[in-house]
Image (cartoon, rainbow, N blue to C red):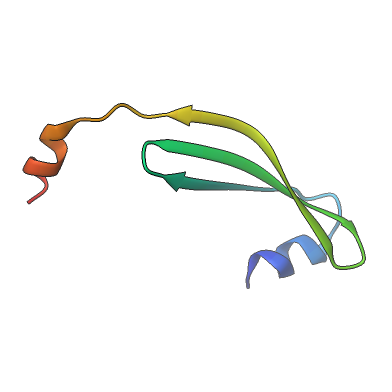
Length: 59
């Protein structure tokens, strides 16, 4: 089952999604607005600190 099937099953369910790019995480709510029209509404954005040790320790 993909996200489209989840949203199509009922219009009352909202799906929380996120996108992580670099040191920034964006949180979205996916919503069905009409016949096959989906929107992604940005609800929050956070920045994570850079820890150089994590890159060295992960190896």
